[in-house]
Every structure is written in C-alpha cells, then in structure tokens.
Length: 543
Image 1 (cartoon, one colour):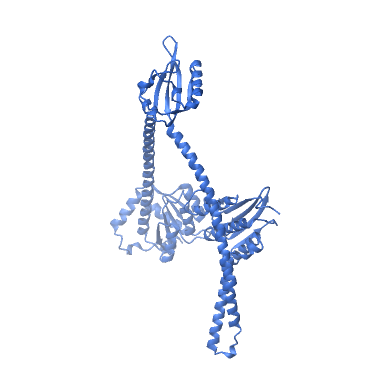
Image 2 (spheres, helix red, strand yellow):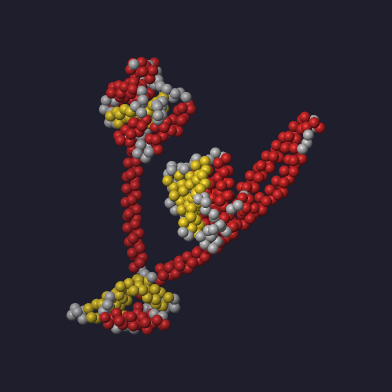
C-alpha cells in the first residue's frame, strides 16, 4: 500500500531535467543545515508515512509533527508553532481551505507559511481558492520530490525573513521608544526653562516692603526694579477696590510668619492691564534666628488665566451654537419629511391616479376589434403601466408611508419589517402591547432613525434575523433594534470613525434634539443591539 501510494504521490523525478543533480544536492544541503519544525496535515495515513520517510531521509534534524484531521492540525499548530505547514486539500470535516483560513485568521499562527498539496492542484480555480484562503504556495499530486524540497526551502526562507522582520520591527520599536523618551525629557527641560522665564524671585522686610527682586520682575510688573525696591509692597500693585483686603491678608501673613503656598492674586501692570500672579514664600531669619522678612517666588499665570477665560467663553459659545445646530437639524429633518410627504402625495394622487386610469382604459380594449400585433402591444403597455403603478406605490411608501400618519409608529415599524421579510430576512416584532402616544415630530424622527438602522443592517451586518422590541420603564420608552450579524467595534459615538462614525453621530444629535439618547451594544460575530431611549414627558406621554 505504501509503495502504491508513493507512486501515485511522487513523479519519477529522474525523468525531469529542470533540476540537475548539483541543484538538487544544494536544495537538500540548504535545508538540512537548519533546525526547524514542520507540521504535516493529511487524513490519509499512507501519505503521512511517505512524507515521514522523506523527512527522515532528507531532513533528519527536523522535528516533524503529523495530524490526520484539520482540527488536530490546528491544535498542534497553535501549540508547537512550526516553521512551515504542509496541508492537504481534500479532508473530511474541515478541508484544507477551511483549515488555512482558520490558521491565517489567528494572530498566533498567521505568520506560518503554508504549502498546500492537492491532486486538484492543476485546476486554476482550486489554486486560486487556495491562495485566497491564505496559502503561500501550491503543489499538485503527484509531485516531483525535488520540487517539494525546493518549495519547503522557500517556505522556510519566508518564515526566516518574516521572523527577522519582526525582530527588526521590535528593535526599531525600542529605538523609537528610547528616542521618544529622550525627546520628552528634552521637551520637559524646555518647558521648565520657559516657565522660569515667567517668574521672578523676591524678598521683603518684616513690613512687606521689597528688599530684592530678580530682573524678570521688570517684565512682569512693568516697573524698573530700582523703583520698587525699598518703596513698594505687594498690595501696591493690586486693584484699588481690593487693595485694603490684600494689604490685610499680607499683614496677617507677615505678622504670623505663615508660609505662602501657591496663593493667586490679581494685580495691575504699569500699562494698566491685569496680571495674575501665584505667590509662594516663607519667612527668613538671620544667623541669630531673628525674623528679618520673607523670601519667595512669583509666577505669572496671566496667560493661563486668560486662556481659561477665553476657553470658558468659547465653550459657552460652542454650546450655544451646538444648541442652535441641533434645533436647525431638527427643523431640517422635519422640513425634509414635509417635502417627502408632499412628493409622496403628488405621486399617489396625480401620477398614480393617471397611471391607474390609463391602465383601466387599456385593459378595457377587446382583442376581437384589433389586429393581433396591435392588441399584443396594448397588452405589453398595460403590463408596463401596471408595473409603474406598483413602483410608484412602493416609492410613495418609501418617501412617506401613510401608515405612519394614519396608524402610528408601531404600525409603520410592522410594515417596514414585513417589507424586509418579503426580501428574505427573518424579522420579529414585539411591541409588548405598549400603546405609544408620541408627538408627530418625535414619531417622524424615531421612524427615520429606525429605517436608517435597518438599512445599515441590510447593507453591512450580513444578518439573517432582525428583531425590534419596545419596552417601557419608569420615565422612558426603549425601542431596541437587534440583529444577529457580524457586529462591529464601537468605542465612542462622538468620534468620526472610518466606518459609519458620522451616521451614528448624526443619529445621536437628532435624538438629543428630542431629549432622547442611544445605547449601542455590539459583539464581534454575534450581532448588534441599538437601544433608542425616549423620555416620557409632555411631548411623549404614555396612554
């Protein structure tokens, strides 16, 4: 059995002239010098034994693992992390393509080169499918021995190159982190130097009169140091209306010899502009321990305080602008819905009626009074008009479904799900017999949001089941749209992600305009649940 299988699996390589003896010898020598792990996955035991013989003969130093099923091979691959994998295509349960996809989708095993072996390897579709599954090379049965050796060599070179690249990337990452740390240290030193440029050192006597000032005080206060030393106190630079208060505070500090720990005061520059100084200081004593005054440092925080005030003002303006935008968005949505309704009514009342009348008139024509070819043309025209009537009716419902205005949100949701059901998607609607009594504008916005969510499911989720559920809790309604699709990563609804971020942001903005909110729960490959929360208030009140 082994010899028979070997003849089927191996070509008579002596008849092949594209490998001379010297080249074949080099292939074997190149591989045999390496200490590598190889995994062979094949459900046919004779094939495994034949490959075992080849490895024992040509690669005695290799550590070879054998698996007779796809699941066993995946388990061994994750445990042993071989340098290359020889994978048979035709296997029960998991075939080679499925095993290849699983291995290439796993972070642990995706870097392992895979050589796929198949008796169907001459079929270009099979080879293409194998490459799409992630295979790095393909060899057909029966194969030439030295072609197999050469491909194994290629797989090992690929693995070695990728390992080297990962190592270089790791080293590069360490270098980048080191350089980043050095840059941060340099930046920190620069910030420290910059901050010192906005401070001055000072000393006073026991009465608070300045006895020393560093040169930076001239820039910060706007007065020559000579005009300040021996003449002025801190409170002399304060606003007239709070000067006495500041004087009392500093007098208390000086008399009680208390430390000044980061107290912030508003002073006036010589030009009249306001400046904010943070003062730190402590009492000083002479050699005989006699109290002789205070020493400290003042930091100019004017820019920071101005920036804080500007930021506060900007935030207030932004909030006011956001409020206006939300209101404008609401008005725009309602105006759009009004226009939708107008167009839908026109299509239904004007175009639809005209088409219906034309259909009735053409349908009433009798065949016996017309030539066969004329009657056939009239019949075709009748069918086209009937199709146009159906399409106009569908367009009317898509633009502005009458059921939403005549029967309410629950009936409109049921109609929408019935339409999806007719397209082959299983749907479930559970209203829990809750009678929603919503303001007309709220009903329109919620319906449009639900339609957008359903459209996204149909376009992206690959779902086979859509479920909508309405629940009620104290103070709020909850409308949940659930699917069993592929899910997605959802980090922050306020962000503009590459996939769908603006749509979610827009939806949230519209909900906020009616005091609603949205909660998204999504698990990769297990589906998504979007909950629309509506408060019970004077506009949305339960029956």
